[in-house]
Length: 265
Image (cartoon, rainbow, N blue to C red; front, side, top):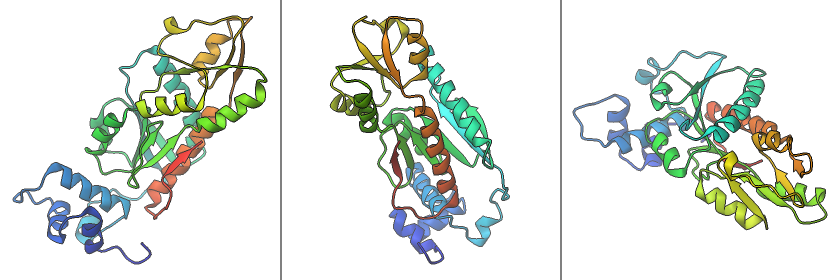
């Protein structure tokens, strides 16, 4: 929207009446409005940076440094947790080059004092559950989300296959952590001819005569101990994904309108 955003614009985008938008942003408790509708209104308000004069007074004071929450499901096993920490370390290195501070959270109750949220490797259902609880800029990393309200960054498995094909002249197997999002798992299987999904070290059974392609650093470190195993590791995978994540955070916080919200890297 190039012109100044009005309450009528918010109502139209949210699919509710102007009165409903007014009730929501003014915290009217005497009106019967569902939590889903309230969340939708706040998401649209945040997306278009709508600031009515009465509401603007209560906004967080602008600061050149933004606080970003990085959220993951810590109930997963050590393999997933180790890979998340690797992503978190690389992301932190890139954060330090921008006006961002970050906080690692495992509870959605910690979202109240942050400017944006990065949700890492959640199922579609888990992501939707979080999106229904917040109107802050919310980014999905490795969850298949197609919604203009949210920026989404996913692995470009077709591009990775091109790299592996160039490295190996013969047949190889893509050794990969089993995705949390079932849609991404199906996508991988449709792209690679040979795939082995693992969720723990106990599930890794290597063959001496096989070639392996890996993108997860935790699997790379594990394979190093097998001297007779041939494998190709894309070491720029995490860095590229982290850079795109930071770029999308900046876009989300700008509140500008962007035609593209979903990216593959």
